[in-house]
Each structure stands twice: as C-alpha cells, then as structure tokens.
Amino acid sequence: MIFGGFMIYSIYDFRIMIFTMKVLLCPDKFKGSLTAMQVCEAIGTGLKKSQPQAETVFHPMADGGDGSLEILANHLSLHPKTIAANDPLGRPINATYVTSTDAAFIELASAAGLVLLKNGERNPLITSSFGSGKMIVDALANGFQKIYLFLGGSATNDAGMGIAAALGCQFLDKNGELLEPTGAHLPKVKSITPNRLFDFDKIKITLLCDVTNPLFGPNGAAHVYARQKGASEEQVAYLDDGLRHFSQILFKETGMDVSNLPGSGAAGGIAASLVALFGAKLENGFAAIAELTGLEKQIQLADWVISGEGKLDGQSSQGKVVDGVGALCRKHGKPLDLFVGKNELTATEVQQLGANQVFSISDRATSLEDAMRNAAGYLKGMAASL
Image 1 (cartoon, rainbow, N blue to C red):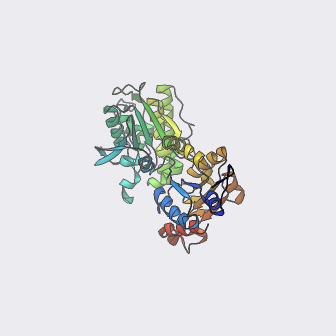
Image 2 (image 1 turned 90 degrees about the vertical axis):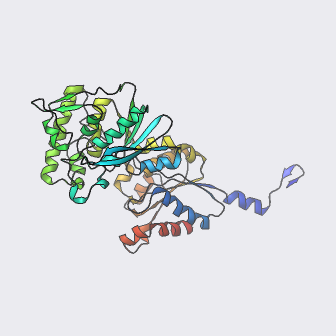
C-alpha cells in the first residue's frame, strides 16, 4: 500500500518478491532412458513441490547428435516431408526431414542410421550414406538452399561418398570404372567426376556434430567408431587406410586438405566429401542449435538455470550441452546446477563447467538398470528435495 507517498510492503509482499523466480530447464537427453523434454518434465514436476512460486521454462537441448531434429521441432515451427529413400544397405525406405520457411533440417540417421540395421547387418565396408544424399537432393530440388545435416548415429564409414554420389559425383578406379560409394572402395578411388546437378555457390550446407575427431588416425572415424558399426580389427585398419587415401584424392581434385579438420571423423567421415566437394561447413552442434532456438536470450532472462545429461564425464566439456550452457551462464552471471544420470567429474572439474552443484541419479539408484528404468522418478525426487 502507499502511505505518505511511500510504498509500504507487507511481509506477504516480500515473500512473493523473494520466492518468485524464473527457472530455465535446458538439459540434454539421458541417452537410452529419457528424451530431453522428458527430463524437463520430470525436473519441472519436482520443482513445483520445492519451489511452488517459481516459473519454470522448458528449453530441451541437443548437441547435433541423434535426436537433435526432435529438439528443433520442440522450439520451431517446422513442416515434415517424407520421401522415398534408401537405408544404409540400399534397401528402399521412407525417410522424413523437416523444413522451415527457408531451410531444410535432415538427420543423417534417418536414412543412414545404425538403428535401421539389425546387429548382424552391421558392416561399414558395405554401408552407404546414399539415402541421406537423396534427402538432400529432394530438399534442394524443392528450393531449400540452406541445409542443416545432423551427423549422429550413422552406420557408415564411406567418407560421404554416398551423399556425394546422390548429388551427382562419380568415383572412379584406376581403370576409369565406376565405384559403389562404400567404405570398401575408399582405397580404390583414383579420380572424381564432380557434381553437375546444383550450383553450390548458392547453397549453404551446415554439418552439425558433437565431436572433434579428425578423419583418420588413432582418433579418427574408423578407429573410434567403426567397431560399433560392425567392423573387425582388420577392417578398422583397412578403413583407416582408405580414409587416408581418400583424403589425398580429395586434395588432388579440389586443393582442400580435410585430413585434420576437427569433426571430419564424425559419422564415418561424412564431412570429407561434403566440405571438399560442396563447400559445406562444420559447426559445433550445440552452438548452432542454441542460436536457432534462442537459448542465450532465455538464459539472460532466467534467475536460475538447470541443465544435465545422462553421463557427466571427461567428454562433457568438449562441446556437449552442459559445457555450452555453462559457458553462457558464466557469460551472463547466472547460477547453474546439473542433474545427471551419473557423475564422474571431480568437484574442481564441475566448477570448471560453471556449475554450482551436481545431483546424480546413481547416488540414489540401486543399480544401473534401476537408474535407467526409473530416471524420471529420481529426477522428480531430487528436484522436490531442493
């Protein structure tokens, strides 16, 4: 009330002023357990008990890996388009991408994903990204000159030859014979007939990923990822040699050296062909998704930020969601807490991420199976006890 020209606050007024806060929830998914939105919903439900006056804002996030398209759909007005494509073994499938007014957003895994194969079908010597290339071709043919390609979850190790073939390139051996665009043929490529389907001077292809691996070598595409795609130790060495050879052919044909490009080892070396042959750009997935969804503005408006991921470990500080959120919180002076499935970082490492506290499901669960199955319940409980 107003008394003598001064505003007089009651104790009730001050309680409302003190406890009304805006809490931003911007976690990554808990892989194999909860989507990022489900993490938001679980923590938000718990916060209603511990912080009943708080306003909670859900802003689920991703870092460019599998599931990123779903995150964008949560934030943007996107339109799905389903086309006839091919799976990693060339079998016909229907695959869906989404569009905004001027851009197409495509998940590599929609047509070249490991999830499309049975365990016994996994073989990076014979799988191809050609189906994902058909999705890009469809988007370009429909007038979308901005293409965002999310690189997570691939079943391939073809250095992007499959996509390039769909876009009009031909890969020839020493006899001028046409090669199938698969990992097995990487060391056999001697020349490349360039694309003639589209004018890539007017097209922007952005590759979004969550890793910084080089194309080949001990930390390259084959040695780090090919085993989970079905490769034997002998095949890993063969594919690594093939990637090395292929990068030399790309350099000879285009003058571009992609051998040590950070992130070129993602998704079986997809970036090698797309960067060298079509001028694609590699970007940190988190940074791009944060910009597209307006995350920084939401952090500026928040009083308290909560993020998290399934496993907090040494890789979390290498471009993952919690790393990016922490950097933005430090920039704008916002407190950050993390809710995770498991925490393997020291207190010092947590502070380096910009977080005040970490709440871990594994500290409460009876087993890994319990933690995975009942993650939502544990998140609700931890948030309710704050």
